[in-house]
Image (cartoon, rainbow, N blue to C red; front, top):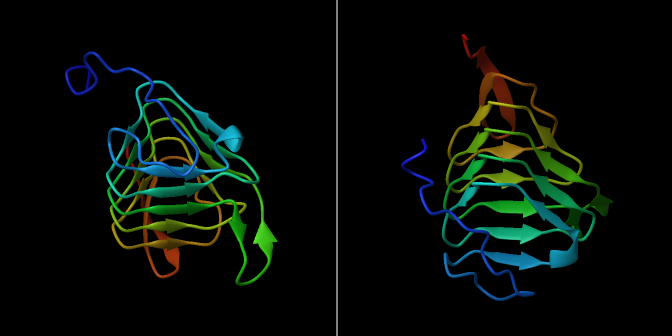
Length: 133
């Protein structure tokens, strides 16, 4: 993993403008970005009610992370804990926490908290198995 992040630097994040890696943040003041994170191209983050992305988190391309939903009027902090991985094209809804070391499969819709050290996927995402240490 260290080679993957060799020379890693915090990206410049401008309001509603693509980073050099082609992901976008709205309400950037609500984003708390950890160390050595990897966020895929075309990912959208709305941090109006806070999004915390801890160290070593990986987020695939084309993901959406919402701390607010105008469809159902929900809002709440999204927390992606250390070393979790979010598969491409997944959507994380308001108020959700993804646990440490957990993996969310591609194309998942996460509506509820996911505990530490598990694999979850689907629409809606459900825990499929624990990750053995």
